[in-house]
Image (tube, rainbow, N blue to C red; front, side, top):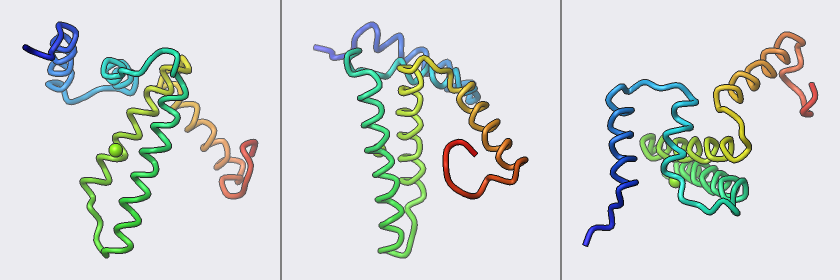
Length: 126
Ligand SMILES: [Mg+2]
């Protein structure tokens, strides 16, 4: 008996189509990633926020091990950064925000700070 549903097969076909192109924008990534989300609607925002915190911890742990062992497992660290991206994407979806808009708004904020000479310092409203 197979555990693979028609939805899984559709998702796989979609993945193969996207993967073939090996090129996508943030919004396409967000749509593709959403097809792999399995958490309950009632856990929206909370689930990806906690997941992001967990994955950020995994990133920190890989870097900690670099300090301990004197070498970086770059591949493992990059994979954890990818896991963070998935949770950021899911969080954006739950907040009804396009990742493309989020990225552009973030750059606008940072370049605004750079232009005002306030990129260093503290506070959200610089
Ligand atoms: Mg991970």
